[in-house]
Image (tube, rainbow, N blue to C red):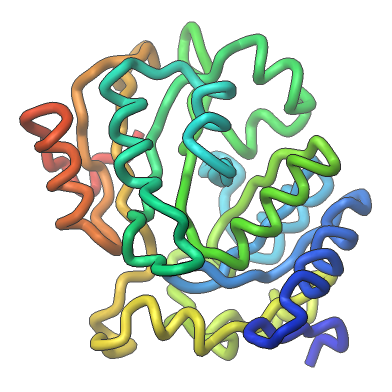
Length: 265
């Protein structure tokens, strides 16, 4: 077992977050941390992305996501429209440490603001955390992925000016069943620090089994498939946790959506 394992759920969660953040601030730092759908591997730089992809056995052509700390954070980094901003604000919800069910896990494919990409992400990271289109780069910007990992990403951004990139903590094309034991020994032994929270993860989907649980969140694309330009056409390209809530919010804001599950681009 990795000797740098911490446990979420006690009175000292703030200290746990700081310890994970210190590891991720080191060059090439990679962790395993909990979310609402399982475990992820967050990192903050090129060396960390390299390690993350190697531990997963994942093709570098399949970029990680950007963990945003708020809707305003997304709007600063990515191109959006008024309706897309409404969607993020509706899903972000109310103060979730009181009741996390008042928020909805959401990831949207959006074009970067070119100035933000250049200002906050070193160019050598771009291929592993964004897709290259003819005129822009696009990424999946995620909010409300779970209190522990949100606290880590918020600390990294607010106190260290670092964006957090992530991918699921499991071998490529395999789920982790929402349990640390499902992450696999290669990853657990290969990262710098682990934040265990099996009880927290299970609480997010309390009535499901290992076979029926969601291993990921919903992903909605707002970019043209060819150019990458921003559109106001919501296309659900991946089903996931809280799917019905996302559909309800899309209907309320846009009046419609296309369900194109599996049509990744």
